[in-house]
Image (cartoon, rainbow over the protein chains, first blue to last red):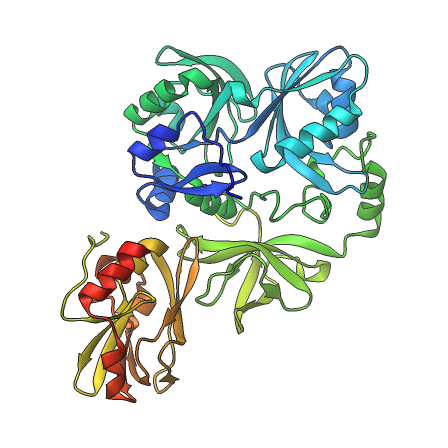
Length: 350
Length: 131
């Protein structure tokens, strides 16, 4: 049976630019236009734009919206007010990670959740099953397109005011009404712009006219690995937990949420394995699924355009997780040396 | 700067998108424009060792782009006389010049008769058209 792939509202724009399209999480998405490396460098040097309309958007509202989300999300919503956003995890009863997402507090009773495309249906089902009277969860993904505009010159090129990371506001770009979120997945400054689906083409054209370089999923992956940002499905899954993944900072263990007790116990006894970032010390590119000697496994790997060497993330035994620990990775039968590094793998020198 | 699509008619081809430039009992081997375009910008070349024996239709090395790794299939059997060190250091040379500076190995042929089994440029273009 042929698989039907979904198209974002920008599909024609990608085709016109000669993008190479690939299936991703049920969508046909651009993996690259000119090439992964030039797109990567555009984001590190200046400004790139990604169509991330495949991501899911949920609205959660009602007088008990906060109660529902406090019981299902790991981070503490009391730490943010209207106009602020928060990185958080949707956790199962075992403390496993159903998804990682950003929650935007619209007002006291209303939230926007932006979730991974691959998890849209399972997240919605999970939340719907836990709805309580006074809370309503709606999938509004089809109404919106989402553009990530990222890079040191992104805000300037869009003509937007400076604002703190993890805040958001209504805004206008060349007369197009949108929600401007100061978030991203590249380790650079920039924003993610939520726009009505019917305005997406116009906004895309204006953003390109303002000098943003179109970037595909290929560069999105190399950028996020350099920034040591985990990808759900690779580095974090329903079978891995926040403590082992180094995401304890976004788990408010003093509150009750799904899996909180399991995470408290895990934190107290210390995880067996930890997710680390590493760089190759020899010429080789680590790939997902490769064994790390001593019982570890690579969960993400690529070639770093900034460091010009192989980099990656993976789980290793806890006593091998400190920076500068030497690792040995089985690269298709050849043992290659790598070294654990502090996160992020790459950061701009200020 | 990536090269534009071409398939020189003085080369012999293997359907796995490899080429051979035969000169007496030696040959220089590489991957075709089609192969490097499908992979994207190369960032790693894992070569054989000089002195290794390579066998027709079997992998003798690997090339990797950011996104993917691919075996390089030997179009001919022989002994590796030289590995292109420039490509080891600067794998993107293959994208820039797949039939020139971007060659991968030079070999001494084990069996010159194997050359007859390779595709000529027209037959290879047919393979590309159907890919």
